[in-house]
Amino acid sequence: METFKISGDLTFRTAQTVYEELRRLIKKRRPSEIVLDFSAVKRIDSAGTTILNVLERYTDENSVALTITNMPPEVQRTIELFKFEENKKNKKPEELSFINAVGEGAYGLYRHFISFIRLFYEISSFSLYASFFRKKLRRPGEVQRQALEIGVSALPIIILISFLVGFILALQSAAQLRQFGADIYVVDLVVISMVSEMGPLMTAILVAGRSGSAIAAEISSMVISEETDALKVMDIDPIPYLIVPKVYAITFVMPMLTVFSIVFGIFGGLVITVTYLNINFLQFITEAVQAVYFKDIIAAIVKSIVFALLVVITGSYFGFNARGGSVGIGKAATASVVASIFLVIIADSILGLIFYFPH
Image 1: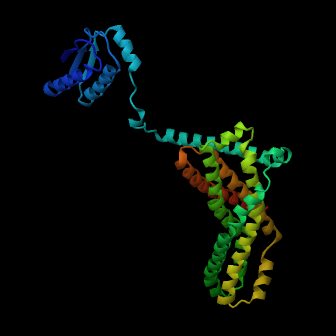
Image 2 (image 1 turned 45 degrees about the vertical axis):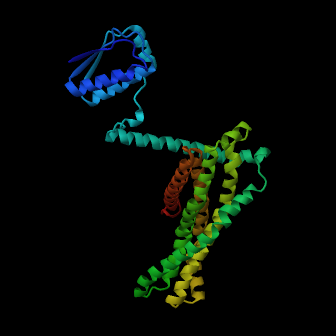
């Protein structure tokens, strides 16, 4: 054990000298403990307090115990005043146990679920009531503009992808069914698949990737730049002002996009059946009409509307919860696409059970 008596005040004029002397003492003698005697210290400033903090870290790194004795009350109060806490960013986060990690994740999902349901309620209530009775929330031409942006702009990629899906679906099934002389059933497979499943689902996924991410990016940029706060200051609620026109637009255009997807998917199957299976156009149309029931068409329209609402609400949710500048905008858009596709598939499974589960 070594005792080091500090003579005089510990201020910015003497702090560095004291620190260097103590470092030399530690390197030379390698003591297990150093006792700092403050009996002669009458005054200490912020520089002296900083040196004490640096010295504590240095002694810890060299496995030397540091003890301070005979400290006057005035000096103690000054040290407490200027003492800084260790930067928490440099500390390694505590590792959670498996049970705690599962609990944290479950609680996080619960909070997101409650917030999502609350936003869904607000958007639904404004869509069904407020926009019709609060004229200042109406923006002339906004619904039409959103419909053009979400619907017309997305039409080319939906037509292309749907045609290729129907084309490949018919090609793969034809290679198997023709072995059993069941060429005509390729028509049934393509038509039923596109009407009841592939058409609504592919349209929703493409709209989620294109328009859902755009909604999340737009809202998140407004949140981060505090434009939504400016709307609130002007007594304008951002939800009916920004989101409700998108709800009207996407609810209107999604069924039409789904119809285009179904038609061009079936057309892709028609190309294969006519060129590869030698089934003429009239046979294809006759079999297609017999394969589809009115219930399948209703199911496709209902699915498209539900998927549309999920896409716009999910994009809005992640947009309103964005944080962290430009990086937050990218994260919000990415999270919106992933969550939208996940929710669309879950909703598709539930609606499939409702429409097709045997009663």
